[in-house]
Length: 191
Length: 205
Image 1: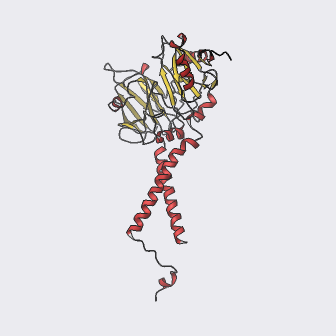
Image 2 (image 1 turned 135 degrees about the vertical axis):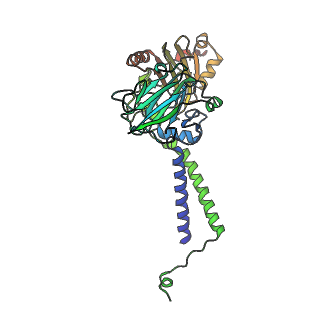
Image 3 (image 1 turned 30 degrees about the vertical axis):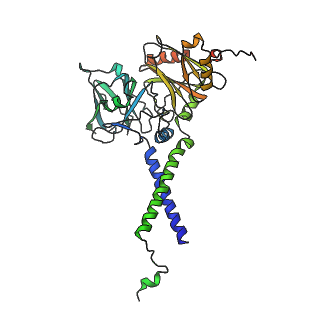
């Protein structure tokens, strides 16, 4: 009797541990098979036939449509550079140099990867209309209130994440990707 | 005597270090097996994967727009793009895809029920902004290679491991005007069965 009880406890512990560790590794965004560049994360193998079982499980769970290798690469930031989560009660600035891509876009989206609609202002900007300094450097303000220069509105967002999509880019290959210089996300005024 | 010894009806279990180690190892091994099983089973049982979310939007023999709604709908699409989807079935015949779009970024991806993009290209591959692409399965590709016709050499041939596919057309459209242009381009783009590209069979029936 006691042996059966012990076996049941051990089985329950195994089940809990196994499922919990599986959940940890497929929640969005998955910590497995990730390339990290500061706070930016990329999954160059996601949605390809080279994808590992973890990436497959993650995509099946989140339902995201990835970019193909001939299309581009998505990079995701969940926090600012001080590792604090991104919220609409703070202003942020994204500043840096242009990544190596023919076209790239910056957008904010919710925790499930859906784009956020805005009443006023925009939730996304593209590289072709970005205002830049003479040396090619750019600065984008994220704020619920209108800002001068490049502005992305966060008024309809509560918690959000920042996505940069590089189109027709050389950055998908391993060595290019690890040396990619991504823009900094700095937190400003918080309400 | 004290009350404690009366209350206890069974002796305290005694564990040796080796028994604890054996049980821990067993639990960890079983947990590992369950972990691997769960990871492999997620894609099988997931009902809200990308494929099943995008299927309702995919047109038959033409591209139809995937509406970008703030909640629900298809995740991971760029809000600055007009996205279209077309369902392709290669069982009967290859499929032909043509897109004519200049002066903007666009891309085409072939997506399969396993949530894998089996083929993708962008407008740089297109000749003067026009794409003429044929999608084939393995046996159709082998047949095409045996009897390469001149028409085929002008097209891009994409081989797909599966017969069921969705072609995704993403057109960069950051403004209202660009969106209208993109919808026109999408309406004019073709996504049709192309039985004529296959070489005629010598036997004739």
